[in-house]
Length: 226
Image 1 (cartoon, rainbow, N blue to C red):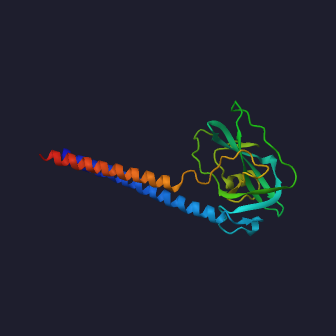
Image 2: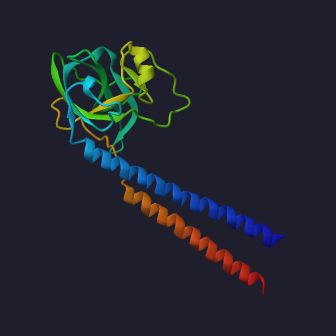
Image 3: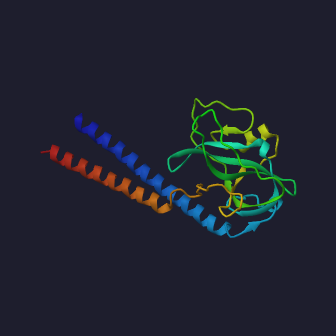
């Protein structure tokens, strides 16, 4: 009975370790695809929202228009070298009448939670350069309640909800402002946080651990037969 239980336990552990390794390989392949798309699409710039393809992610844009400072969105829980802060998003109306949501970058949070940072304002017609990126999908604090009014702190950038709150026809993606844009704040956003090689290295570690568990199990079973 003890021997059967040990075998079953070993098989479960091996299954988990192999699945973790395969998951890391899958993540590595996803990162390779993303890196290739960033390189290929990042070389092409669009000058109007209307001209964008159906899948606009990772293309660059250069748009003329105005920021709407009355509906600022602050993405909460954004650390920079251990310091808490926000990513500042402003709606941007292009000269052709299209609305987009722009991440201008990071700014530090005040000392006290009930205070909001002083937000920069850019009036008049400006030129925006940046890259189209997906909205954030971050873990949310269960106790965090929805805020009302503006500026508004949010746990995630959800364009559908923000479109309803602002009354603006926002797309389901955002624009990450170019670090060289004159109006860019501090930039710590990264399209690829971990490269594919890291995922493959983790996969090798999981497979080696599975091999070690299998070897130890074989040694114990062989020893227990004597």
